[in-house]
Image (cartoon, rainbow, N blue to C red):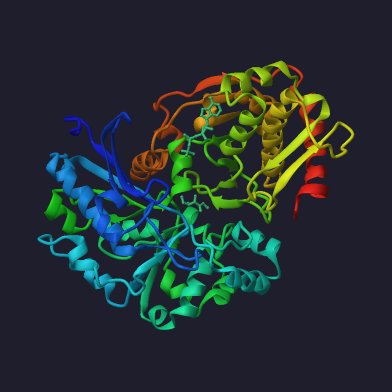
Amino acid sequence: MAASSTSRLYLGLEISTQQASVKVIAIDDDLNTAYEDTVAFDCDLPHYGTQGGAHVQDDQLTVTAPTVMWVEALDLALQRMKEKNFAFHKVVAISGTGQQHGSVFWKKGAESKLRDLSAKETLLGQLKDAFSVLHSPIWMDSSTAAQCHHLEAAVGGAQQLADITGSSAYERFTGNQIAKVQQMQPQAYDSTERISLVSSFGACLLIGRYAPIDESDGSGMNILNIRTRRWDLKCLDACAPNLKEKLGEVVPSSKIVGSISQYFVKRYNFSPDCQIIAFTGDNPASVAGMRLQRGELIVSLGTSDTLFLWLDEPKPATEGHIFVNPVDTAAYMALLCYKNGSLTREKIRDQSADSDWLKFSSLLSETTMGNDGNIGVYYHVREITPNAEGIYRFNAKGEKVKSFDSAVEVRAVVEGQFLAKRVHAENLGYSIETSTRILATGGASHNAAILQVLADVFNTDVYVQDVANSACLGCAYRAKHGLLGDVSFADVVKNAPEFTCAATPQVNAKQVYDPLVGVYRQLEEKYVRHQ
Ligand code: ADP
Ligand code: XUL
């Protein structure tokens, strides 16, 4: 698609592994998409030998991506835009996103390479020697258990670390990853001038010097104080020496971090006035793409289930993550991940509803809210929230039972999943009393009967809209918001396509589910947790 001929353009750029690609989306002032393209790591850049954009090392715990692959992917994405006569000169602002937690280690002297890029050569040709660690640790890595224990101990425990940074210690979180690099590759660490997140690394390339980390993605590192929005010195010290100077400053996610560098002006004909807005992590960027607002909750019902909450008063817990909000600097967002999502619903569908979603839906509709007090917990694989495994069924007296009949089983899996989500969201500061609406996405959001249960358990209207490439699109929106500066994000996106109301709570939903939430909380505490 060529760019529209009249409008100014805003560009979103994504460096992702969920989609194993670099993506580009350009929108015009009316928020219409004017250009969209994807460079897929595995098939467009096969010489790196990645699978899903990553390398899993022999220990099966260490997962990395070749840093220069991301540089080459950007070269290729821009080259393709040029070949399609993309109107680079119309782009007034760019923002972007990277997979959260991954890190890039710039070697001493790399910033002068960034400043002196020649427009005659590719980025790859000039930056291939700019990194002190060639294989960037990424979010799929789970090799830093020792560093996590050390960090929690240094601040007094898991809850204390969560109180400061918004999360207890997680192996993929960047502070722990940096600690491992410092311990295993001390020379590489010593020769590092700057450490970027994948997001801020993208911004470095565009402004031709080191770009700051933004507050929202910085919250996924286990070293940022989410209330003061400054590095926590105790956490930094527990991770690695001289870390503060290698990280640079932290800025609000909507801040302009610089103008585009002369390299892009000369090579691609970008306007020298094009402004770069801080890049952020893919989950915060999705929150922007879905236009989450105060009082709303996003429930993504895909292969795994994910919740994004808008929070004004966060209550950090040892489960779930609280990040600084990417579109409102005073607010927060929370992220909860569940491994037992659609695959679990599918398993119960196969066992109890003849492998048929229609039958599954009619069994759900035949049964009543609250399932006569029967509650089920189905963790076929080890769950993240909470860290537990196994199948548990309880009758109305809270006694364990071995089985349910088909209809009860079907309602139990869906109700159990949504009761759990409400309990865990409330643990982080969410309240259904101030909740305005739920935005549902993902495969199961096409199932009206499932959405009815969601509306009932949360006593909140459920809206749907498939937002494709929400993280990348969110950055095109953020580019416009950052450039305008003095308007709210909600104002900037007010003309984006409306969501459709798909389910409204039934009359007695609150009376039925408020007590069941309490029961679920106790059952989870007593029988499920720590199993
Ligand atoms: P991903 O998370 O991989 O992007 P999707 O968001 O597309 O995946 O969700 C895929 C899941 O959606 C499948 O695992 C499937 O079980 C589920 N799904 C598809 N159709 C329905 C339906 N009608 N009812 C419930 N779940 C569905
Ligand atoms: C979030 C997480 C992933 C990455 C990659 O904590 O690890 O969602 O952001 O997409």
